[in-house]
Image 1 (cartoon, rainbow, N blue to C red):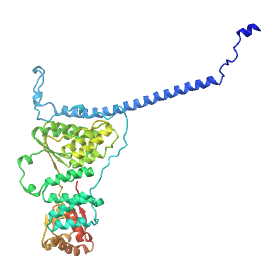
Image 2: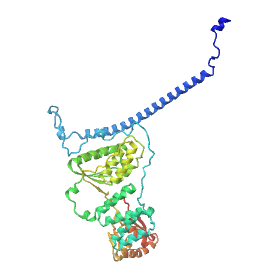
Image 3: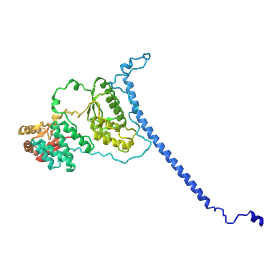
Image 4: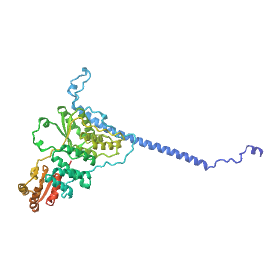
Length: 467
């Protein structure tokens, strides 16, 4: 017994119970599972990032491949093609020529290493007045329209300017802007018009109305330089197929210092088309070509429609094209707003505004007037004094038409007294059975005058589009 007691276990020290061991083992297993889960999540995130990078690079390679095919089809310039292998290094062509040596780094992949998203909404205020048969009566605006109709242009301008500054007309404030735009257009005050455009773009974050050239310039014979300007009209879909147009653009640029780009028909855009157009425009700027942009604001709206702040697509080309066009239009405040959205989306420093060094002018699409004379009556530029002759012409036109469309695209001003005569002359026509009268393309000054005089009770009034 002594020996067993000597080598036996000391009292007071107990072995851990069987229930203690599994507890520590469970803790280790749980920790291992957490680490494994984290590793799996990291692998999944890395895989997603890699996949997006591949998509972005594939889009850029597609743009590069399209441009390469274009440059190969066009062949080498004469200065290059005349060289043989023994002639030594090839010489570069003149810097004032436009070529397709595009650089693939003009824009980058939009997939960053971090995938943080920002929940912001690209807010756009659509203040374009839609055509309407009955226009809301706004006494202040109607008073300004009457002042303009009675020849008190400066008073009307001051009233509209005050309404814009006070901004107390609610949704009708936008109508005051449009009325003032029309006033400056009619008075041929382009400086005031452009200054108002900057304020409008900054407030509503959308493109302002476009300055239209005077009729005097349209009637004057075109000079050789103006008539010889090559024009390129882009299709309804701006995608990879525009490479065929860019081939023509390349040929035009070698023979003309001024180029006209028409975006009036563009309805949709995609990243590939935006990338191709972006590189072409940048090359035209490098070669110091002067540009005439037609309906450029339409292009910016189509680009905005596919963008979303905080969302990174396969390429940032649409964003960069939007910023490029805004710079060409010299819309600095709108550019800065868009650059901030671009900065938030891609987590980079916002690009700085750079005014174009080449000459850039804007123009509106030329109206298609094939059968306009047959289905509508063209109103004169100004209506003053007696309207008897005008009413007789409208009545003669109404004999052959159930729908009498009065085209006011050229109408600038209606004298106050003449508007009352016009109303009295149109009442018998509108009261005839199966006859209806519509005023189309009415400027906002005349529209509110008609509204105040009660013409909206005898005819539908459709205001002029400001885009």
